[in-house]
Image (cartoon, rainbow, N blue to C red; front, side):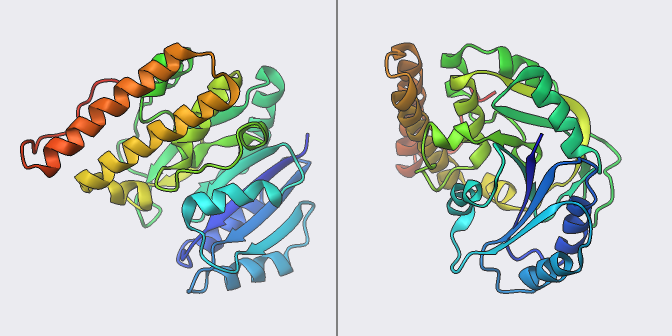
Length: 282
């Protein structure tokens, strides 16, 4: 089974050598490794190029540098144009794939025929040291079994850093149009609209916590509310694209969107300063 592992990077020269080396060391027998840089201004792409040119192993290598910075979603929307397989394993430029990550994902795909796969991870600090306390993820089974109207209102679905995506998530829906969201908030929901999601309870990725865009956005209340509203708009568009008769899902999205808009209006008017409503977020 041909798989594509994509290292997607932006200004990560401190981490990219270790990340790419681990990607090239995958034990899956039919793998292409795509090294894609979003027009970094540091040495990220130079390191990627060096490692690609010196590689003499069995994997097919694709090297890409976007001519201008596209941002997270713009970059994600381009990735399937670089790969030759139907499955794309995502690898951020600061995370490290275990050697058997791709082969384990391939086994899950053969077994379950899903449209989205994600796994457990080893949490690390910025220096790459495993944290003393590792999280135990208890939500995956519940999220995969949730009725679609309830899932539509849940902001966080899966750990995007550990995910693999089927080409149908773009071929059937088109590009992600809301550019302020994170890709996992869109793609797992799309996968459930089409069929099955598979979770692998094995730590297939070494994941640096407290880095990256998702952690930066948590402290900004208006930014978080704006993002939640964008997620609801994207999900509504995705439902209308493939199952417009599912009025139950569309009503649930409208309810969540209305609640978040009222919270935004109250916050901007100075009437409310507390935390976001936790209802339906998980």
